[in-house]
Length: 132
Image (cartoon, rainbow, N blue to C red; front, side, top):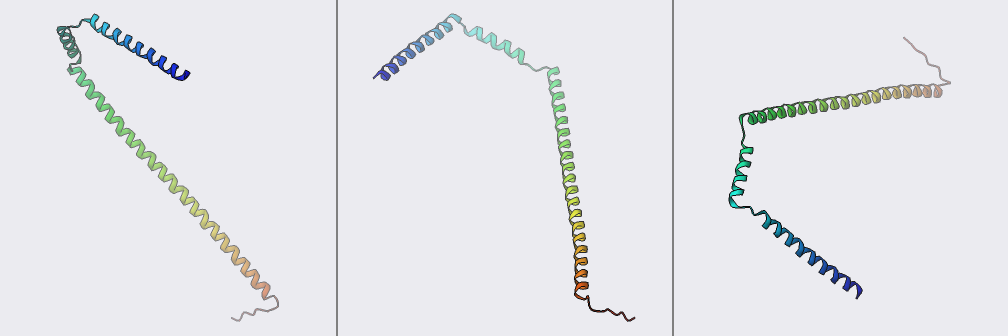
């Protein structure tokens, strides 16, 4: 019951504030008393400020040229960065492959030595004769 009372009082308060704000707004508009001629002259003055001159056109073209030049430079730098990155990746892959190849060669040599040792151990009592 108390919450319903609080909600209803707050709604009434908000409605009263809303009406006062609207009244204040309409009073402000009435005080302004802008006529049609005033607005026309104001708009004409704004158009004068907006007119483009040769100087502003030249500045705009200059700005556009600079922007295009900078965009091209950015694209070139991005391409260079990508090239450097891809070269680095290729170099790392090459180094890794060389390491694997070298490791495999060492392992093969060790396996040959182990096989030779096995053969010598198994043929310990045998005598090898080379006839040439």
